[in-house]
Amino acid sequence: MKEIVCKLLVIGAGPGGYICAIRAGQLGVDTVIVEAVKAGGTCLNVGCIPSKALIHAAEEFDKVRQMSSASDALGISVGQPKLELAQTVRWKDGIVGRLNSGVLGLLRKAKVKIVHGPARFRDGKTVEVETETGTQLIRAETVVIATGSEPVELPFLPFGGPVISSTEALSLTSVPRRLVVVGGGYIGLELGTAFAKMGSEVTVVEATPQILPQYDAELVKPVAKRLAGLGVQVLTDTKAKGLAGQGDALVIETADGREQSLPADRILVTVGRRPRTENWGLEELDLDRSGRFIRIDERCRTSMRGVYAIGDVTGEPMLAHRAMAQGEMVAEIVAGRKRSWDKRAIPAVCFTDPEIVTVGLSPEEARAQGYEVRIGQFPFNANGRAMTTEVEDGFVRVVARADTNLVLGLQAVGAGISELSSAFSLALEMGARLEDIAGTIHAHPTRSEGLQEAALKALGHALHI
Ligand code: FAD
Image 1 (cartoon, rainbow, N blue to C red):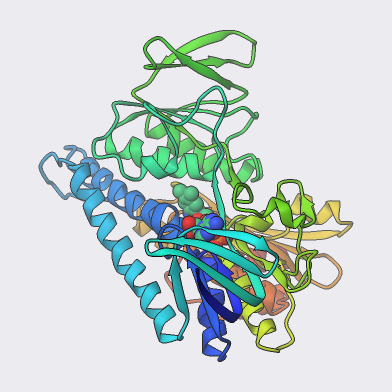
Image 2 (image 1 turned 180 degrees about the vertical axis):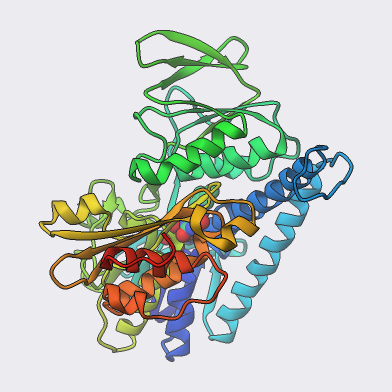
């Protein structure tokens, strides 16, 4: 059996793992990374990037389709557009491929050794990897577990045939006529919206009383309105029960306890993701867990000395930028630097239509933590830029301490506002007060002026409302 001895072993080359390995390599740490499938992990191959590519293509198609209607307000006329999803998917795969090679190139540049194949723990510092050329033994002083997560499968709706996960949804080569999405969280709604724009009849089945249950109702309202405008049927308080007929229908139980059958060509199940912690020897390490996730401290240390864990495998929020930030921090710690982790300013973006951005505390969370709050909210229908782009729904909201004006949280819903997320995070990271945001000159005309106006509103002197 071939054997490698190294200082740092990273298991999993998703955004957490590859960033950790690159940074460690840059700092001169002798690093090996093992990847079972493809560098870039869920995010790059079957998550963030391909979903945003599909969302973009669907938006372009929908825009042209709207313009092709005789009543287009802008005076642009085009013919009826056609969508060839197989070509869209090839284009998306091209982007994934480019980024994939980019990650491998960056790892090589940082002098990280890449081993392809599934890793299995022998003990806390040793793994075996089944590579194409035989078993490789890797011993390391420090190990980082970055094995990510996978879609949760419902026992009564196993994946296969018409029942698909987000992974398969991103590679469909024809648009399903009737798509039922089980689970109205961000992944289900992002993909459901994209398919509705591409022409599917979409129904969303959500067990709780509200789609996007982790967001407050006010933020969700413009998204629900747009879904209705796209003809998407949203069934809340409704449970999926199983397949019916020849597998071409979904049995659901509605709020009043009645069972009903929904015809479907595809059933997309997006009811959450679970950490990849099983069937690769991790169980035998007996690490402390927090539910199904690996428990970590503020330096991403697990309960075993010299074993760190980062990214989705450690719990919520399961987001690529959280995994990357943890990976970068752990690499620096392994290289001897003093670092710790503060999750206060992790932005969350929902790429629905319109988009939702949140960072820090919502008004309810702030009050629940005992703060007396000052809130400023500015609607995009009073924003010139929003009017010129024809999408005026949504608002920006700032939540601050009433006594000091220290910003505790920022939320927004509106077209294209994912780009505001860095301004939001920066404000929290820098400990901004309402006066800092209000006193910053914001470019005109931009949607970001809504942020300044929201801060001014909280201070009691908004200028444009
Ligand atoms: P992963 O990306 O899951 O990577 C883990 C890697 O470990 C994988 O490559 C896997 O093959 C490898 N691995 C697992 N076990 C082994 C083993 N035993 N040996 C070797 N290798 C192993 N997040 C965002 O921030 N923004 C978004 O817009 C966004 N959109 C998403 C859309 C979809 C459809 C999905 C599914 C997810 C989305 N996410 C998004 C979430 C994001 O993809 C994850 O949070 C992120 O990928 C987590 O990174 P990670 O490094 O922890 O794990």
